[in-house]
Length: 107
Length: 119
Image 1 (cartoon, each protein chain N blue to C red):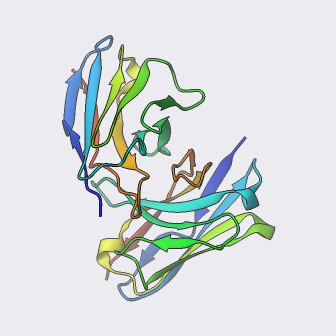
Image 2: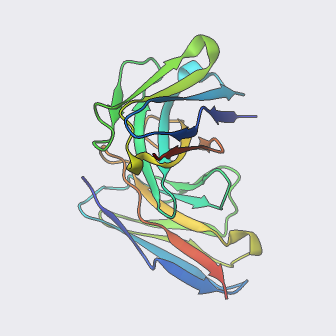
Image 3: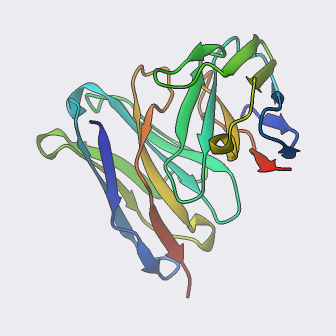
């Protein structure tokens, strides 16, 4: 199975900050990497697919980059509604594993 | 608009069975691959199973292989997860999710249904 490792596991930041979350795969997954936002009690939300494509309706302050084994999710200017847990997920091969999550909290 | 509504969760004893349902609306259900994803209490997301749009391809995570079966009834726009021989470690919120591409990725999710396996 492909292991996905996110860093950091948690992060405190302020509204307006630029934030970067990293996801590393245990083997090359090309660009088969997606990012989700999850708030407690809500359905997860797709943000980025194929490493860098912005899902329709997602604000442009979210961006993704990377290929091979190393990927990043960047939020250019944090908004109050962005405080949530973020997960990466690989689509390269089954089982389609997720990272352990990065909890983004208000400083 | 796209909606996915799960049901069928509850409290069940270890070794027993449960069937989850996910009713889809707002899109042509028969054209999409569908998935189940779960989240154990305090843990991250775990992909469980997928079923292709026409039912020809299905895959399960090793953790549920031989115990869980994914199926669909396109005449009723419903996805199912039959869970047998339940274990305490199956306790989780179970989400159904739509896959727009077969890539796979999950562009719409339901709100989830909680399954608690406990004696």
